[in-house]
Image (tube, rainbow, N blue to C red; front, side):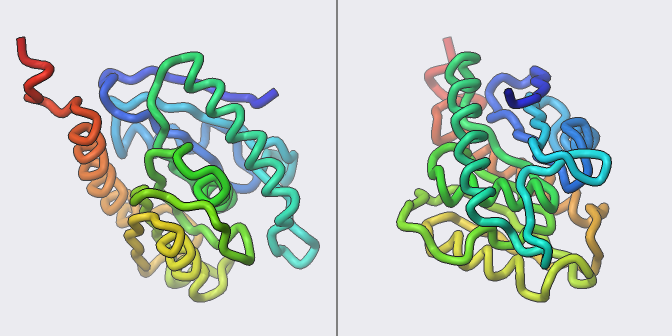
Length: 218
């Protein structure tokens, strides 16, 4: 069973935020961030299924810290099935993932292995979850990637390589590198907040739910 917490927001027109925490964290870690980015948006917090460092993660790594690709592929499929079932049962739109570190890598795996599952994604300090491109195609799914130039837990160019892979798969990727380490800063928050406002506005227009849409005037 996937441990989760859903909190309804005041704006039912926004795609909910799927919050995916970092290594050793829990499903509650990114709630303050979500409230800062979009306080009226519903949130679905999910706990990783790997117990590690006194907390949880979304997948295993090899002893050399590389991603266990078989493990993340299997766990991404399980998480994707849960999200599809949960969203269908509760009747909400495909979520926008907000992931940090380990959770950002899992969000990238969801994008690559299950196109259409997410409406978009904000990835803080990710790296490519898989070593090869996949044939699946995304249709201009918006993705924001933010790297830290001084991030000692990442190799230089990890985020750029993921951005290029997602772009080749058809995503509409925005990539930033900040003078920061392996932590979410005020600069990250500002960029993510502005990106999310723009993306939510575009999503509402595409679904005919934008404020002032003729179908909503009576």
